[in-house]
Image 1 (cartoon, rainbow, N blue to C red):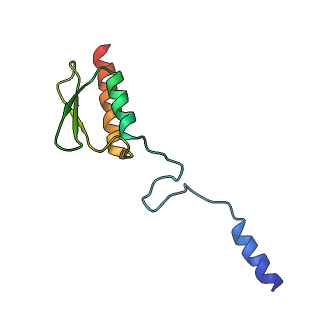
Image 2: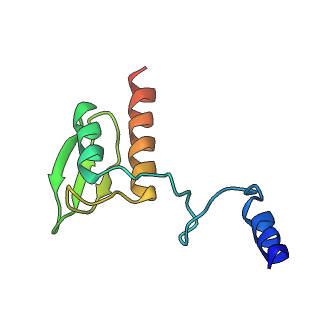
Image 3: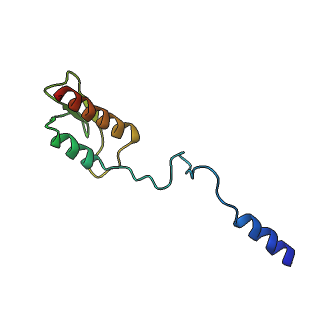
Length: 98
């Protein structure tokens, strides 16, 4: 019995290798932004909101010639692609303003 305990404790004390991942493949400590946070970031950058169908909103800026669409209610977690779209959109606004 003593050997079994030592055997188990040996495996339990091994250091973790690589990144910790969940079933979806993302890190466990990643907290997505809320849709309301993305909208607040866009409003702060003087973007214009146009209501779409349902929970969709279209965002544009006077200096850019394209729009991005954000879907979801304000309390929902944003998807990674939505966060990336907003980040890229704000980056393009900064580049044009220079």
